Image (tube, rainbow over all chains, first blue to last red; front, side, top):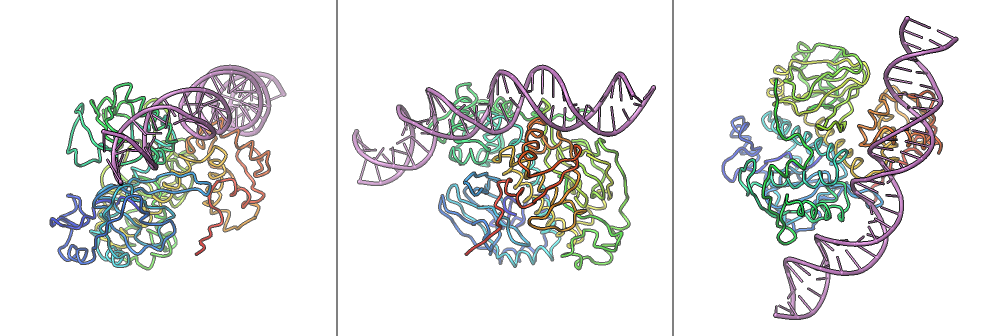
Length: 248
Length: 248
DNA sequence: CGGTTGCTTTGATCCGGATCAAATTGGAAG
DNA sequence: CTTCCAATTTGATCCGGATCAAAGCAACCG
């Protein structure tokens, strides 16, 4: 269920509602219009729980603005974030009841929402919508699996470096950047939220951030604002294959 | 990409090729027939790599028999299994190139395969196929997220107990069973493969299995055959919410 | 049969990250 | 500009699981 099918922005700009350049051409005008009629917007305050685990969900939709968190909690309180919901990410499970995860606003969040039943109906009749959703889910799944590698095998330092890199890559306000550029932005998550995402404690998160700072990979001004003097150099700390090469 | 969309059994029995009872009725006869024409079978030996990370993939399909493993490896050799492929699980990524995961046969594996391009074409024209696939992907994603909780927050003992419970639940040869039944079956994975799945070392896996045996949660005859005297009691060791309750 | 080979178990030690406990800081409210 | 407080950093210690090292053990083979 949940998170990040992505890009259900619903056309303030005439884009394909189930967006993404590649498929826009597949959207029939009447499908686009159908989505258009169904959408509503709603804003949630930071800290507010948008969806409770086990809820009977009445809507699906996507994040327009802000950051939310998709997480699961054990009885004894141990918590694991299983998804980070940034603008353009899809929220809600079409078909059947949603799985037991909470969605919590990390900052003020605006959702673009569709009535669930209507949306499900649309999936069943529109190939374009269904296959676009499928594609988005496949991306989601790939991301989830990469996260599994991080959780199962990376060290604390690699986890922190990976998270910072991922947040930077997804921050559209930075525009496209490359290689060794210097970039800066605000971390949308508290140390505790990062810990829940990375399977660490908040103390370890803090220590590793300090350590990356000491080693010159990042600079901090205030608690949330971060600067990365050399993006590629930080990427080397993630433990990931960075060359992206594919010889022979 | 990959793994477990599930149930592309392709009708030796007249079932919906994109199976699952709930949707069978949605399959049009001609769609069923289209899938029928496209399928081929192939068997792989235990230990064989079925798909290499980065491959240009020519087919998609599903596991008919045997067990395969979906895994990712870091340059320095650290490995994390990100999916367990059991009979009925889907393999391959329709649309775009598959992500960098290996698929390796853990036992002898038989796949039912479709030519990729044909299958993708089918998705684009058949709502039934696309929406069934979507549903399966959503289940996959839920499972992946539960695994994230396991990797990030569970103790070694809880991880082992969880894995045994999950394998037992998915073993169809056991038939449906409930609560405190006694059940027994063969573990389809080596200690090392379990370790790769759980984000542990093989020594820790072995120790925890021994510990569960000492405490009477499981019995072992030979290295692979396992008996669970009281399934519900083992479930209590997983750390999961077991009551499944949903009061008020 | 005895020997090789590949799992698996068990043992001893080490270390990364958790836990418990203060101290510090930055930002919001007055 | 101060005050206050939650978020963060830093410190000291502990422990679960990793690592290094040696046996068991069952299947296979000559």
